[in-house]
Amino acid sequence: MNRSIPIAFTFLLFTLLILWNQQTPADTRWPTYRRDQTRYGISPLQGGMSVAPKVLWSVDLGGRQTTAEQIQFSDLDGDSVEELLRVGRNYIACELLPGQEQWRIGDLPNPKIIGIYDFNRRGRQAILIESNDFRQTKSMVIDGHSGQAFELYQRQSVFGYRYRMANFLRDESGQQLMVVWDGWGNPGQGQQLHLYLWQFDALSNTPKQLLSIHGSGNIFGAQPLIADLEGDDSDELILKRIATNVTPRQPNLIFIGGISQSDIDSIHQVIDQVRSSLPEVEFLLAIGAFGTVDPRNPEAIGRVYSFF
Image (cartoon, rainbow, N blue to C red; front, side, top):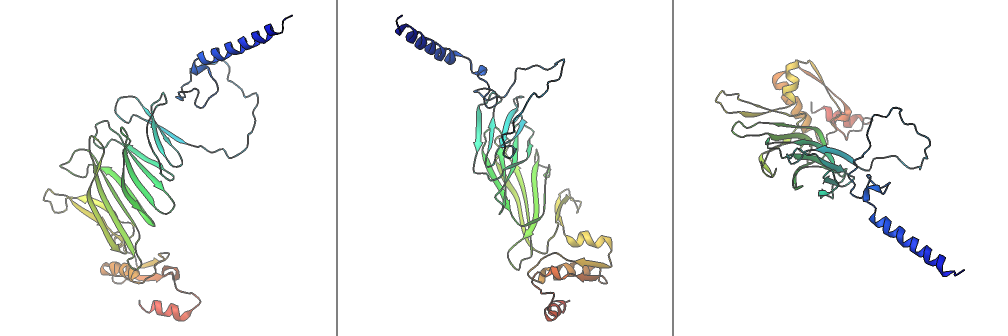
């Protein structure tokens, strides 16, 4: 028997297998990441099984079971079709459901989606995000259609942080973003107050800063309020401070502790604010409020308390 015939037959069979594999549709190659080569993750399976499926066997491959990405679906461009947002360790990406990537923003340490908003009610969504490198938190807004990102502000050493979307401006359509927070400033300046008011373009979600307020002093838990106080059909911006929150309660003893100030001026400001309305109030000061006083040193404690 001629040995060249089996060899030729084997080569022909191998060639046919290669050609057949190349002609096989992508969706029959299983398993692959997110089902097939287009990675759209849509399954053709139908529900309604008469018997619930059971696990026959499983193998633990070890390692931590952590999610590499967070996903979220939203109609970002107003075409009534949802897009897929993928949030990884250092990026945010947008894909169509069939798997085509629309845009990607990298160099974002530990990004997180805060919310998705249609500020101008035009169907063009804006994505409010935060990234945190464990030194400071950066807030940004991304236009959901184009993927263009805009930095809004950065904050660090924050005690209180609040933001709100509303139609703050009577003569402007749509909603604006107001942000206020307080935290440590430079040494000797006490608490710092930061307040921003942003408006967003209807066609591109490009932010426009309408208001920026920064103040120093002993500011804790400031809250913004917009109201027409003077009755002139024009709104005013009011910032509620610590004395505004404390005085209405009419206390006769106030305990101050845990402020960890490196100076005494900030605590003086708190006492002066309260005593301007409640002159008879008593104060109990914790040693920890001053940060640098050794509680085992009577002379040091005496020097601090002699100021009051």
